[in-house]
Image 1 (tube, one colour):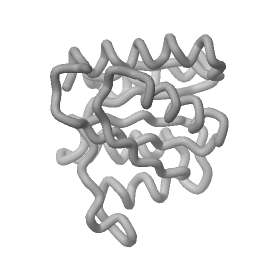
Image 2 (cartoon, rainbow, N blue to C red; image 1 turned 90 degrees about the vertical axis):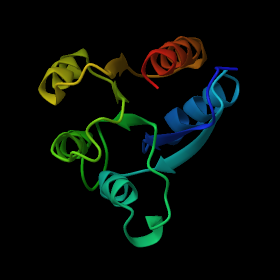
Image 3 (cartoon, one colour; image 1 turned 120 degrees about the vertical axis):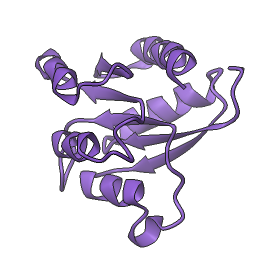
Image 4 (cartoon, rainbow, N blue to C red; image 1 turned 180 degrees about the horizontal axis):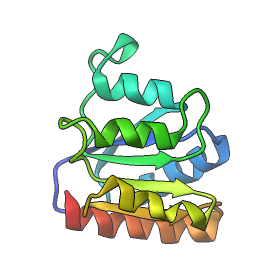
Length: 140
């Protein structure tokens, strides 16, 4: 186990296969965590702002953000995070299917962020979880 108390991870992802692989990978990792899931950008912002059904949601210690989301896409979520002093220090990993999206992190302007290319499969899932473990060790 990582030498940390339980961390709250917010996964913002709409693809059921990616959710399954991420959940499974995290459950088999050294990360002592509670995983919270939202499947669109609107609910992500509500969760982070503790609105509506998320009134008692914890502030995440770490965010996994897919860029291609329904209702409000990940770029819009990222922009709101960037402009909110309560939220812009939360470490995050951006998940995307496109290498072209990598420059989005430069716009976010934070040293505690990472970009990972999807799609996931069992082999790449292990690599991704390993990268998340390293990231959490260094940033949380």
